[in-house]
Length: 94
Image (tube, rainbow, N blue to C red; front, side, top):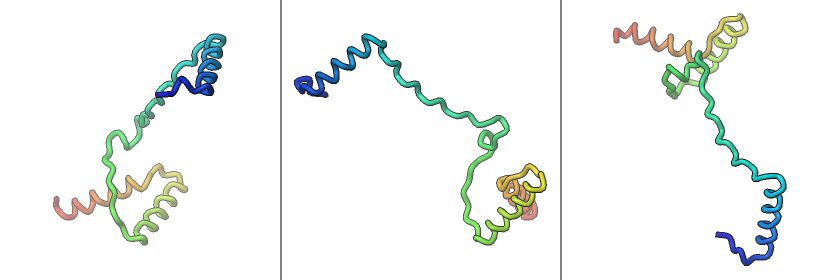
């Protein structure tokens, strides 16, 4: 708790009270709104996972996705990895 015997604090409090009297008390800052994912965002329906891959595999994936995006295909690495895992699991019979 502040020491109200401190002349500097009392002076600051009086100045603030004077400013509040003239201009009104400033409203409390609003809590920041939480960003909602877009309705087309994968964050709403996909699960996030982290996996280790070989550096060469990561480079090849990044290059493939970049080439596809540059040619106008609407794709990202998550979709490619999801399709690859699903195909591998289908091949395994699970």
